[in-house]
Length: 212
Image 1: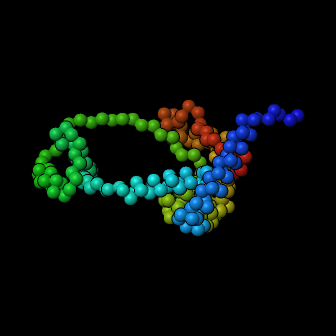
Image 2: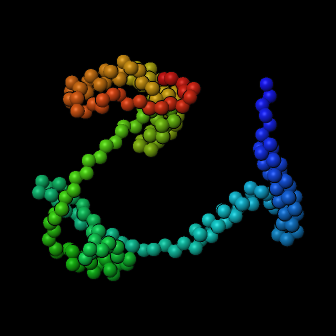
Image 3: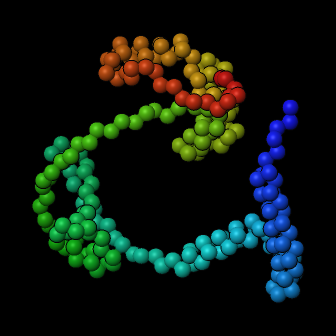
């Protein structure tokens, strides 16, 4: 059965139509007369143009600020390379703004001795990325290897035909339960249970996603 008509929605549409006509029909001819032929104005269009103009003016008015960094290339007692950044001077942030300030600081630092006065270890946790779908496979191949879409899909097809991967044209991140169980068994036996989450991670797929 027909539902009750939402008059607030109807009135809102009528108001938008009125504003479209007032702005478009009345302001556009004024632009032709005062500025140039072919220009147009609109309820949404004119506001969007205003925002773009304001942003462009901010960009044009931006004055870049010069700053310098000082790094020290050192080695640990195990001869491993260790790069340090000079971050503070006399308890305040150290950000030289020109070459002269930088060289003055370097003249003091070059022959100085350094020691570690404090160390903080902060544990972090991160989840692995979701299994590849077609789009993320192509993005990763482009970013990491510089491969185009055609080359990526050709190589993926060969891997699929050889049985190394599942079907590469998919937008589903689901993995088979058998494969997940096999991987968890391998990790547990080779590396120990401490490297296993309590349960396998799952990743959401959009509705109607095509399985691999």
